[in-house]
Each structure stands twice: as C-alpha cells, then as structure tokens.
Length: 402
Image (cartoon, rainbow, N blue to C red; front, side):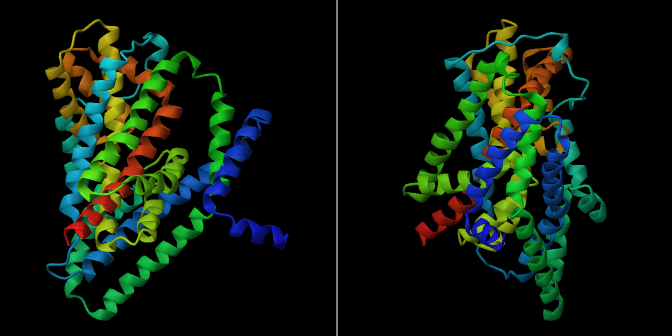
C-alpha cells in the first residue's frame, strides 16, 4: 500500500487527472445509479469554491501591503489584454458565423424559466453594487468583485501598519495557499466524480441532435485558444508563444474544463503563475480579476447563439451590425460571472439588438443549457487559461522592453 501511495504521489498531477477521467467515464457508463461516486466531484468543487474567496482576499491584501510606490506590476497591460482578447474572441465568433452559418430547432422543450438581465446597463449596475457589498458577505457569497475591492482597500491601508502586522497577513496568505495545494492534490478524485456525474446523467449520445452547434462553439473557442491568443502573445512578446500557450492550456485549462468554474480554478491559476516565476504583485490581483472580466469564451457563446437565432429567424445581418454585436457581447461578457447562468443568460441582451423577442431569446438560452455540458466546460477552460496566459504575456513583454 505504501509503495502504491509513493508511486501515486510521484506521478504528475496531469497523469493522475487523466486516470481519474477514464475511471469516472467507465463508472458512469457501468454503474450510473451509484450516485455516491458523484459526491467526490461535488466535494472537490465545493472545497475550491470555499477556500478561493479567502485566498483571493489574503493574497491581494498581502501583495498590496508589501508594495512600494513605483513598483512595477503590469496591471494596465493585463487589463488591456483582457478587454482586447474578449473583443477579439467575439469578432472571431462573428467571422465563424459567416463561414459556418447554423440554425436552431426552437420549441417549447427548449424554453427555460431563468430570468435574464434586461440590458448591458443592468449588468453593470449589478457589478457596481457588488463592489460595495459588505466585506464579510462578499467572502461568504464568493462575490469576487466585492472581495477584490475590499482586499485592495485593506491592502493599501495596511501599507502603514507595523512589520509584525504585515507578517501576520503574509502568514495568512501562506497558510491559505498551503490549504489550496492540499485540495488541488485531490483533483484526480474530484474530477473522477465530476466526469461520473456528467456521463451518468447525460450519457454519451444525448448531445447528438446539437452536434453542429457544439462543433461551431468548440471549434471557435479552439481557434481563439490556438490561433488568436497566440497571435496576441507573439505581438506582445516577440517570440514563439506556443510553449506558454500549451502550458496554460495543460495546467489551467484541463482542470477548468472539468470544474466548469473560473472561481474554483483561481487557486490552480495562482499556483501556475507562481510556477512560471511571475510577479505575485501582478498575478495575485490579475487572476481573480480575470475570472470576472476576462471572458473570451463567454463572448464566443453569446455571439454564436445569437447569430444562430438570427439565422433561424431569417434576419439579414450586415458586417457593420455584426461588429456592433461584437462590442456589445464583449462588454456583456465582462459581466457574465455576476449573472446566475453566466454567458447563456446574456444571450437575450445581444438578441435585443435584432428585435428578437425575449420569449424566443429564452428558447435560444434553453438550447444553450442543453449543450451546456460541453459549452460551459470549453468556455471555462478558455476563460481561465487565458487569465494566466495574458498575465504572463504582460510580464514577459515588459522583460522584452527592459
């Protein structure tokens, strides 16, 4: 037994996760009613979500309390990359629509009772209100906008605190990080449970009717991850971006794919940034911020589904209007993490540009939920891996200038 445990611990985390995926899929097909297995996945995601808000607060407050005036953090570059990358992803989805136009089968079965926001203004109103949420409530409810704002406030206020107090905050950050490492080491078992849930509840053939939509969604996201993002990275760094791109997809994208939660993947991304030797003053802020506003995958989802609805209804769209849609979807995507249902419930905002009624738009959202098993996984993988990629690109582009 000791030999097995020793061998298991020496095996890389990615290989252990792959083993978990295979076992979870096999068990999902053979014993789908043995639902207790799925509890492993629920506990894993729950553990990550539970510790992530405290981790973000501790790391951001600690980083800002230790900084001095004039210290380089590259945050401006990171934010610009986040926003431009989201817009580029939205534009890519528009182009994919002209190359592979698709239509949807809309009907009562696709309807959903979820409530969508009424417009971009409502999305940003919610975000502004989240900024001034009670700090304790923000931690308890995993309101990362509120957590970030209060962490920044506490961090700047702690700059004038005594060295002993700063050391205490630093210790809190270190202890929280260690707890996260313990949880991440349980990822193979957690992902085993998540895969089991997916296979046992949905089977492997349930998505066949929506194969073309899935291919367009996944293909567009893959194009963004493997072509658009590397181009942006190359322009910024001036060297081959693919080793960094593949490292981010392997170490961040895979876990994000199975957890389907940018928030739950924050600890994984923070550890990856540390492994890459990046500046903690930057990544301790940029990673949790990226989980909120860096939403390339969400922008793709919003545009693909909206334009599919437009095609289904026979509405003609010129490229100028599609370009405006890209801007709207990019802005809306930045608020996707603050909406229950994420990017799917922002589809009606984009549909309103074309005069599509809310009833029809919500049927489109219903179709989105049907393919959500794959759509949400790929979207989260793209969003989360890009957080690390652009954080690293911003820092490496600074190194190039120096």
